Length: 539
Image (cartoon, rainbow, N blue to C red; front, top):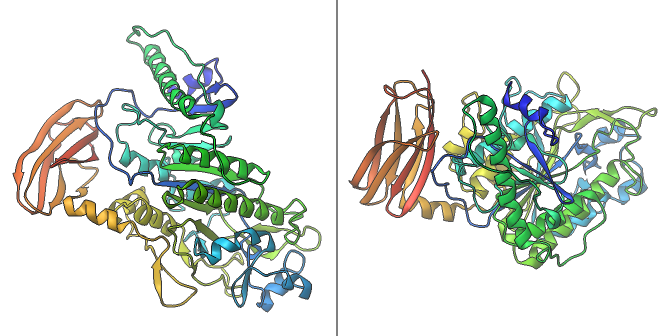
């Protein structure tokens, strides 16, 4: 019996990829991707820095979010769902350009735009679009090419570079939190998901127990040990949450009454209470607007109301973070699996079908608040009558990894190029369709440079390897260096370097001759600093 089948058979309601424990009134999924046996230490992360990801599930209609109201083709193509009459166009007061304005439902965000806390990336999509909800979401979440099936999520691959020993050595806080009742495949690691799912931090408490003791040396014994480890993880984070909540469930602004706002409010509790989780995920459903789109009226269920929910929730969240004194450490990013078609469905439906490109948004005190790129053309379309994208969606992720989390270009490219080698994804975007380019985020390079002034760890090459791989690094001056190799169980295999080295580039060869196939980890101590990495030996 495979582990996932074993989990399904458990009498405690196990899902296919995780064991859900019902913790008081909150449901949390404690997950593993390896036995709890490694002794490696985790890599560094900019202190207190968090990314909050909002998934606009269903495919957001970009043309009725950011509206080219002076474009005559828009008037012709969106007679029923667009803002085409004089009175409708007069309602478009949140303008980012003389001919481009937001849906009135987005008006709550106008103060953030004027304060430079909102970046808009137009015309973002896939190089080879897939218009299936399931496949498009999978592509966005895995950051894969359209023709490749990749089992891991882009956020998980990043987190696994930070925590290569998770969950063998647990950080004091969860490495990822999905707030609500949806777990995203962005957190799918090599074996299982890396996030815990929380509905309410105030009631996050574990009722999971186990007796401990010896386990038989059988497959069933291994699975019992696996379940016990899951309970230990759940109990560990339950204790942390119980210590903090509900007393530190504090907000300083009022939130609107919608599900996204509730989840963002609870994320703000966690961040302000000092939980050091790097990535949060939440969502709003309903953007699959084939019928009765009602884009013009935010009081009626439909696209307008959904945009109103997003705008009001994000505005309250940003203001709350500012009032709580933590806004400088938080970046909020939205995404949706695709846009909607240029052509509406007509009088009988008043909706739009699956399309390609759409605008996507970043919010925070550290964004370079601008309008980036040109608006989708409404004439030169692809074979399915959809706009051609200007930016590849992984450029957005590369910006976050590089400029927010301080990941160097080569490592970010490795994270975002699973299964195939790509040139680095550009993170400089043209402002407002001009030739002037800049990054979406005020760069963390001051912090990255200060780290690189101490030393720089370069990607091991080749990786995976058969006969030999080279671990490379650079020193700014003479340093004491220790380079140790560990197997997947945390057992030290060898020490490649233990000496003092001069400034400059250095490398060490790891032979695969006597190694079994599998993953190997290395710790590189330089002075008082530590970096970790992983290489894979193939036979």
